[in-house]
Image 1 (cartoon, one colour):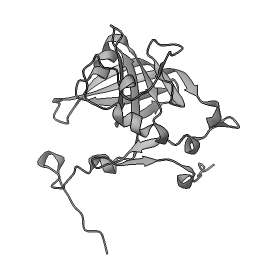
Image 2 (spheres, rainbow, N blue to C red):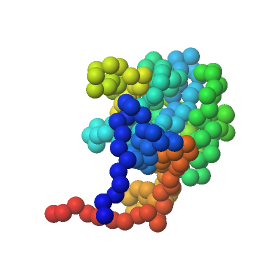
Image 3 (cartoon, rainbow, N blue to C red):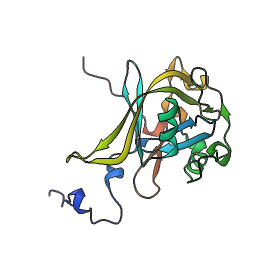
Length: 206
């Protein structure tokens, strides 16, 4: 028997208790982005629309739904760092999404340590086992199919430096399961973790 289908057009509403879009396109990596204002104020915020988009040069990107401090800082400085959110850092990551004034550092709020980067002026999260130092390549305001601009900005950056904890390199291969990545799911507060239980291997046909 075929499934009974719930159909809707997003412009008319989903008619469900919670929008399913984020749950369907998920789980998603978390863009835990650190930035610095020209005046020196530090900002750290998680973004659930984040991913990698290119190998050479390596390019990552995240979407800011709304014009936020992170976006403003990156527009003005052209730099940001991405920090891996892991299961042990989940609570700190969650604390860093608090809505606070620009002069309040989420590093302090979440009990995290800013550590200097090597190539850019924006600090990384010392407690995170993996960080990317990034220089902005493009900032694009998104638009709908009708051509109307929406209040969401896609920020793309070239990864110019990478930091990886040595313990996560097993015979030179990065151990994703061992790093305990966390990912954003759907619903008001669903997250997923990555571990050895989820690992399976599948190689491309020759």
